[in-house]
Length: 604
Ligand code: C2E
Ligand code: CA
Ligand code: CA
Image (cartoon, rainbow, N blue to C red):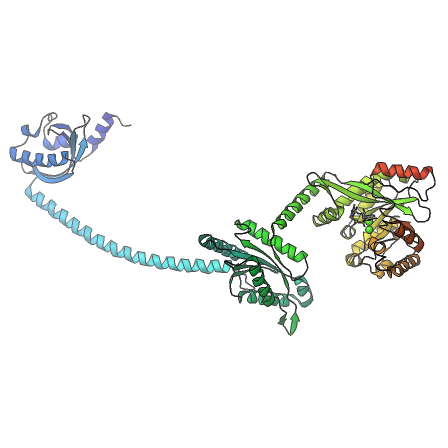
């Protein structure tokens, strides 16, 4: 806040005379410049009557009254002998609430000559101002025009850049960015009209195969053809390539039922997924399609994309050329899968995988000759999960090697007593083909055995034979390393479809574990007996022993024994059990005759 003295100092510093009057025309203030101008010092509290003549007072008071009524006034009046002043007066309200005025003498001149000059200057200045103003105006117009053009150019450049940034250079349809923009545009439009549209994700089947077999140029041509065909379909709002061989299509389908939309997409698929002829060759271009509907499935665009993805995944899982509409259960499945993935990751990190043991019996003596170690996992919320499910997930997460190591360590610790005292000859652990094909697999496994002080001669590795195994040099050298260290190798699920007999000659195989589907379906397919006999013969020729898996009935047991299997395994003889019941079964076997004994019943 400024003090009254400071305000006074400021006003006194002004070169312009400033004064103030109350509504009864008495002077209440005048700054130094004002005092200089009128040449009277003690004017405060007096009114004009003691200072000016009647004629002047008339003029002053007329102007004053105008200002007291709230208006502003400007006047050119004689204020003394030959002195004229250009004065502006402004209304103010005084402390007592009554009107007052503040006056500023903008220009004071001493003679009529000066006055004329001043008026002239004023006029010239005004004219000059007007001229300048009009020049400025026309310049501003020019600038405005140039500016508008520049804006239009910029807008065009921006649009070009945007469309370039949103276009896939190969197929000339939208890219991921373009898709995102189209999706937002369409959802906004349909929000306004309360309409609906379909988002379909398309994935070409076996595209990698096309690239590998026919080359990338052909692969590119297939992508372009598919994009062109998609573009040529009416009702399609936009086509985008999201990357690789994946496309997204936005379809306007207002007022259509889900069946109608599905029909529409089937027709689209028929049109698009036809062979592509390029470079004088025909290439099959089929694809899978997953779709979801806005706003029925969701109004959230991220969710919408996720749902289309889930539907596409289901379509692909169903085989080639499938169309799949998103269902709420897909979301639940996906949620469960994520829950399982997160849970399994933690469980493997914290070693929370347990093992159960399924005895393998000597076919002639009925003695437990070994046990198969099987992994078990219980999700904290979802309960026990089947190995078939979590082994697959661990494989996808790249954690199967770790899981198998946990299981192996557990088996080494828990089974050491039986191995050491010779109650059983071996235990067998499962290994996935990808484990075996990974660098350092054999070394790690042997290190664990050494650490746990388990003789490699009492360990058997069960592997499922696949094409990958045949091709992989690493897999072969791992198996050779293990074999050289004394570990035995079993081919698991033998005869279930993958087997290639050359493998038997090329890999160090000690045991064939015949898949349970063979013995389980023998009643429906009697010719399988011949098949089983030939497997046993072949095993003999190779010096490998045979295990018949999955014996669940007395009939199957008798058949397996008669056919000459070396060992038997199955629920009839024993389910997989935890350590305590296994120990009991082994103790019982050591106490008495083993043939035709009560089977081990407890489940693990
Ligand atoms: P697998 O190696 O063929 O193991 C035998 C599976 O058949 C076990 O299922 C066992 O419980 C089941 N089985 C045994 N006898 C019978 C029978 O008489 N009838 C029927 N219906 N089933 C019988 P499980 O424990 O559910 O394991 C499933 C698969 O998961 C295993 O098949 C194996 O491929 C994999 N697996 C289990 N544990 C591990 C592990 O620690 N590591 C790896 N890599 N895979 C494992
Ligand atoms: Ca097995
Ligand atoms: Ca098996």
